[in-house]
Image (tube, rainbow, N blue to C red; front, side, top):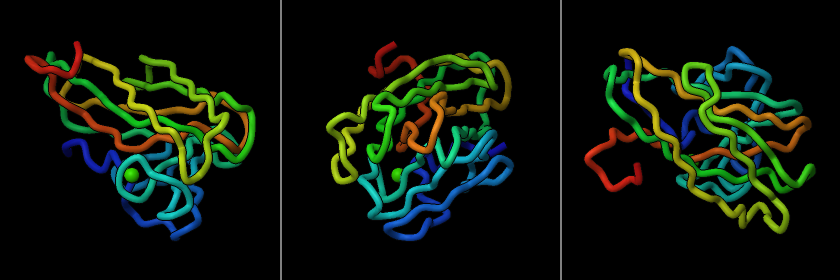
Length: 167
Ligand SMILES: [Ca+2]
């Protein structure tokens, strides 16, 4: 089992100033698209939170991405991620959830009102879990219909405690 990798969605490279639609069963580097379809946003299309690329969790429909990585059972981990939303169309508030081994552990929403492609307004969110096995799957799923979804970037997985990462 591999360590958590490429939480920034930097590879493979999507076309600059454009995006690639990735459908269920296909991969984005170490991530798998687990339902629907998502858009891998290339450099320059809109602001990334880290690096050049990010993921819109909706292509023409809601989608989800997940990555399975090595964990130590009983160990506490904190997942951090940057959240924004596609500002190009409604609804204003885009919603989704974080999945731990397929179970919902956090709902999130982002209001893209007043945001734009050069100024996405990313916020940082975090959620903590205790690993139950030698591997764990973290997923991000859109729960909004349509072609304009929540945007995820800069996902990190940190072993926690003692630490100052806030619980
Ligand atoms: Ca990135």
